[in-house]
Image (cartoon, rainbow, N blue to C red; front, side, top):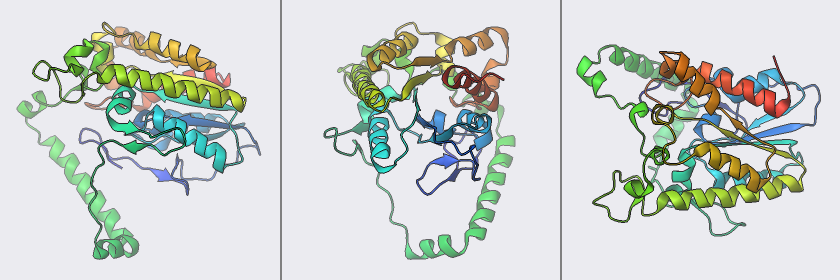
Length: 324
């Protein structure tokens, strides 16, 4: 899989239910205990092979829990709540622990991307992407000529890597760098009205619609409350996980306190704990000159293997009482 041009492709294995996993069957000491992870591209592990994602690292460390990764890029609490309800209905395996990774993009996704008619209906995209119909020839080729597809993918990836070495200094200077600002997470350090104001001539970005940040924050609260009620009904521990982005560390939480918001969500949902990675990442920024490359993939908001390792260690400690 390859999501954005700034990071290399990575291997993804999914099971029959579409959940990302290692690709190998693993025996978990015949345990019936389960831990569910919900989130977006951070929890899915965008940019990293399974063993370099924090869910993969946790899966490799824990033998007394079955680890399930239900995360999908661009999913947010509206979808998490729906998926949790559906999984509990379809499977006879209620979890002992539920982890919800709350991302800065969730505010925009709740406001601008996802909607639902009522609690019993499936979430839908507000602006549906139109997909091209796959031709009969392409279907045959995909089914019977998988080897040629793998070779083509390899050649294409090699070509991309080669082109990267030829990028000029001027092009490097003009590369998009999330550390300098990101419209979907900029509400942390930018006045809401400047991002989502109803006067379009004054808006700094076209990403948001009028009042979008407040609307997104409210929807997250509503859905986390529902997740909390559902977790309590099955006697499962609920945890909220939060990460800072590169620009969050660069500019700070000068307009909106994300950590305070997460703690309030925990109170609303009666979660067990907030697993907050802001302190660890902030400390690394203070002490490492190469903090950006150490924690985040090239010109991207997603985590490196080292960043995922820090996250896995804290989740293991707080969520599973597991210490290396």
